[in-house]
Image 1 (cartoon, rainbow, N blue to C red):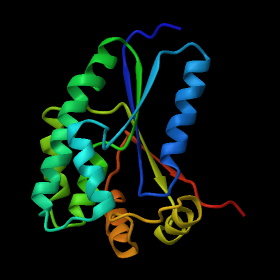
Image 2 (cartoon, helix red, strand yellow):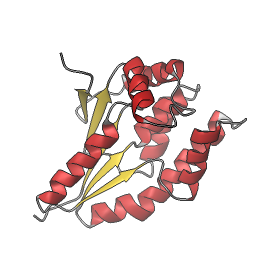
Image 3 (cartoon, rainbow, N blue to C red):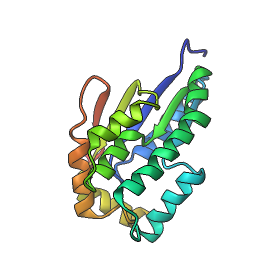
Image 4 (cartoon, one colour):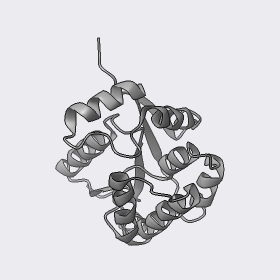
Length: 186
């Protein structure tokens, strides 16, 4: 199936909400129906993304919130130029696990202005067509992480921090956003 333009679908939520799984599942579903789709994630596995992933494992070790934001911004600029824009120009569906809303929330929880972060990113990053905002209470997310990851929670996955991140994610609203409760069903 050939699309008449590219689409950018973003999967957001705190760690442990299931966004990565659902991003992958939708990508598989679309590809199985002959729709050109690409699944990406941030941080990437590029130069900047590797520096971010090192922080996840080893901790911040004196890196300021502004320096951390710079790493995420540089990683996204590289991702936009190398992956996102070319795929959209090729009329593909781009599915991305995290985008600048996560950066705004996670760095906002460190005291930076989340609205400024979004504005700065929108100056160079394509605006999404749709944002799926996955929601689960942070306590349940940490339980999932502890049960499913042998290494356990990383630097960014601490309850008080995730609660602040969730509060900021809750501020994002409008026609682009679809909130999805991925907590346990009764």
